[in-house]
Structure formats: C-alpha cells, structure tokens
Figure 1 (cartoon, rainbow, N blue to C red):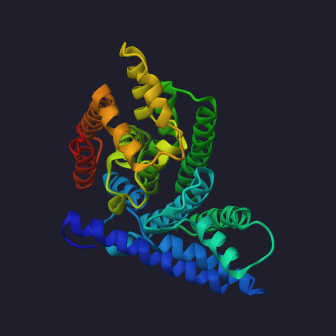
Figure 2: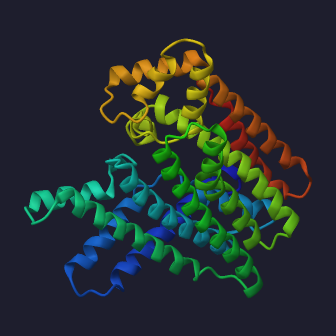
Figure 3: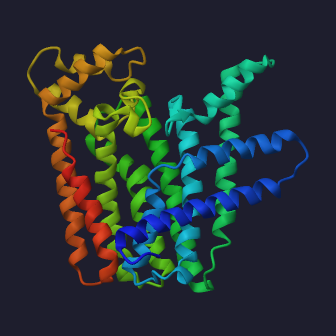
Length: 366
C-alpha cells in the first residue's frame, strides 16, 4: 500500500476491484458451460458489479482491519481485500433484489438487472410476459451473486479461530439484512408513520449491514479482542444509521447524476423512511387542516410528476422534517466520533473513521 492513509485507502479499493474482476472471470470460466445462457447470466452479474459504486463495505473492512492493528503492507492485505470483495458481491445481491422489490429501473447510472432482462426479452420477441421474465432473471442473478459471495468468503486465508469469529458476524449480518428488508416491506404495506420503526428498519437494513458488521469483520479478521470489535461495531451502528438518513435525504434532494438513481423514487414507491415518518408526524401536529393529506398525496404516488415532487420537497422543509433529520444525523455522527477516543483503536485506523463521521455530519441540506 502507499505511504499516505488516503493513498492506501484508494489502493485497497483498487485491489478489491481487481480481486472482484479476477474472481468473476474465473467463475465464468469454471461454470457449467453447457449453454450460452450460463455465460449470459454470469456476464450480466459481472457487468453490474463492475459498475463500481462507493465500495463502502470494502472500505469499512479495511478501516476495521487497520483500527485493530492489521498490517498495511501489501503482503499482509490479502485478508481484508478478499473479505471486502466478498461483501461487495453480497451487496450486489441486495441491490439487484432491492430493485426488483422497488421496481426501480436504474442503478449505478445504468439499467437495473431486471430492466436489462425485460428489454432483452422484448427485443427478441420471446413468448411470455417481458417484465415477469425480467424480474425472474434478476432474482436468479441476485442469487448467483450471493452464491459467489459465500464461495469467495471461504477462500479468505484465516486460521480456524479467526474464521469462526468472522463467519459468525457474516451470518448475523445476512439475517439482519433480510429482516430489515422484511420490515421495510411490512411497514410500507401497513402505511406506517412510526419514526422509531423506520429507524429500526434503517439500522437493520443498512447501518449494521453497510458499516457496523463490515468494520467488526475487518477487526475480527485482524485478530482484535472483543472490546475493540464492539467499539468498532457501535461506531459503525451510529455512523451507518447517520449514513442511511443522509442517503434518504439525498434520494429526495440530491442530484440523480451523483446518486445514480432518479430523484424521489423512494417517495413515489412509498418507502417508509425516518424522513417521511417525521414529516407525517409534524404535519399531523401542525394544526393546519389538510397538511397531512398533502404529504400523503405524494407519498406512495407512483404518478407524481416533477412539479408535485418539487412541492413535496418544499413542504417537508416548511414542516421542519429536513431540519429534524439533519439534527439526528449530527447527533449520531457526534456519538460515533466520541467512540474513537476510547484508546482501544490503533492510531492508523482512526483518521478514516473520523473522516467518515465528519463527512456525514457536515453535508447539511437545511
């Protein structure tokens, strides 16, 4: 790795990209090879994963590894690199399936996997329903990503005791991710406007899965003790929740070119977020007749046009919902930063974690 922390961070992400590329190429070559469709499925997955993304989970594995005293020397980084690559394949599974459930047609600046297969079916003039075909093939592509992630995890060079700890965290993370998605779908079906339920869903579906567990896995892989691993997990839980709340804001107010998906998709689909739950609660308490109805008229309306979305953005600002979410983000970021002063973490691993907490807390939209 490079001499500077920033350079090392960039290099480890590049190493993860190279690991992913090599591993997926190998899996494509060693597949069944019976039908051209075998290559087509793995090819779609390879293209999807290769679009990149923030690689946050891989970065968190690396930061956890460093914070636990893991080596930054190139000869000692095979473990966090391969573990980070496995997490990115698991993330591909989650994103592909998430797009199916949300009916989102774009991801990372390109077509969602189900949209790709739908268009392929339609252009070829095959029999059956094109969207149904697309959704089914996307589910299978996500399943393939999960299989590859599990297989890659088994190749990470760790001794038996370390592997046992890392795999226990991996198993907990998978269950949390699924339960979080289940909760999101249920809250959406119920029309829930409970902010605490929305926070718990975000914690399970995103905070633990995206930041806390990867940090803890990186630390465990480096041989950290239970106290150090727990500090990193708690840091990640708070920073990860703040990250998800920030992502919810950017999903409504951010630039689609930067976020990689259309602005307002979560609002149109009626996804239960802390932002929208707070907005409904504030509208209900506003004392202004019809305010809650105005919020609900756009929330969950798939036909809401850009003019309606613009009015909705303004309404949430007027109600103070954006300000309330920003305040929660700032508090979580501060709590996360405070955990870095325990004295349990290796000095080399603190700057990137402090930078993560700082960036989340500073990008205000109020």
